[in-house]
Image (spheres, rainbow, N blue to C red):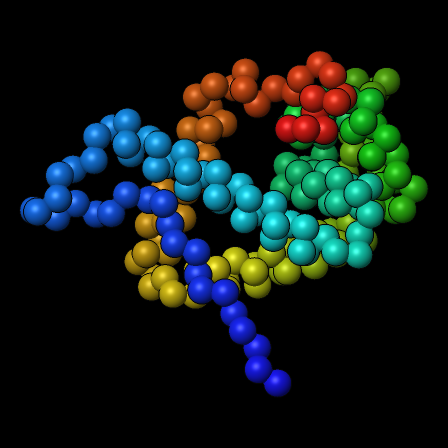
Length: 185
């Protein structure tokens, strides 16, 4: 059986300048960055969809909740919703389902006895570990051609870029007021 593969998609990034080519303008560099970020978002969306095959929409959304709580530690629903960029009522429904499935548990909030914190259970940590392993395998394949130095530089620059996205304009990361707008985001 013969299989065909698509040739790799070429990047829209600007070529490295040489003495014979002019250095791209700042605007050209920003346009190239915008194109590459758009490609990256589409590629990650496709990767997430492939990894989530066989899961319902609810299960995919719940995995995001588990990932955040596993990384952040116990949080109130309101703080979790803020980190997720979702409405607290949506987050409350999702976390309620995760509690029923024994993937999250409620803990008393030491700062306010009327409130509770959500924490990942051992079973929830197992789900997160499985998903992280799958993600690790996918990303390892994506950077297969990188040498150690390239991977270190890329990871460092990517972290700096994400920090900039999160910090430069936090108002852009806030959830919108309508559920329909949130679904389209």
